[in-house]
Image 1 (cartoon, rainbow, N blue to C red):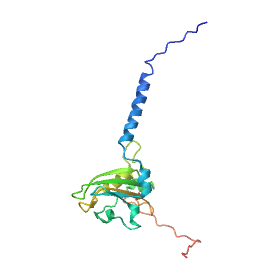
Image 2: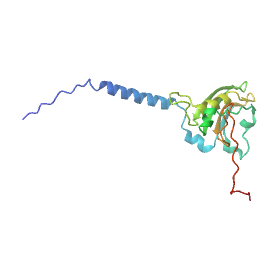
Image 3: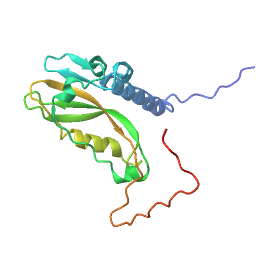
Image 4: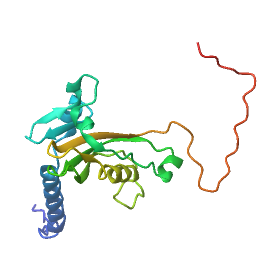
Length: 184
């Protein structure tokens, strides 16, 4: 007895196969063009810098004191903590690569290496804390002729209750009764 097999339409699966191949190639291309994995850089310390001669220096090699690239900064601007992030108690740490103009010491580009992790809006690609850090970092300046590239960690923390919106009257805290803590 001979069973009849239905003919397989070879062209039916071609669009799916083409889409998969294209997606795979795009992933490979993004991996090739992306910066090296962070595990090696982050294990050495929280930041590093490349000097004018192209030598990379690591934060951990400076024994607890400020590394020279921090001391060579002639203008530092702290990031603004966006109200939206503070009101949601969003905190995070990121790592940012700053590319400098060697002759002027000004920042040409600030790139996110490791995101702080909070999106401004799920529909947008930008991240609110990353954007705040990048906006501050592009205003920094260094002594000319010393550094080409600097990797800086930025951490957003909340040490006090979030600020009230403009025009709001804060409610004074109620005094605590029955419990008093005394420092030792």
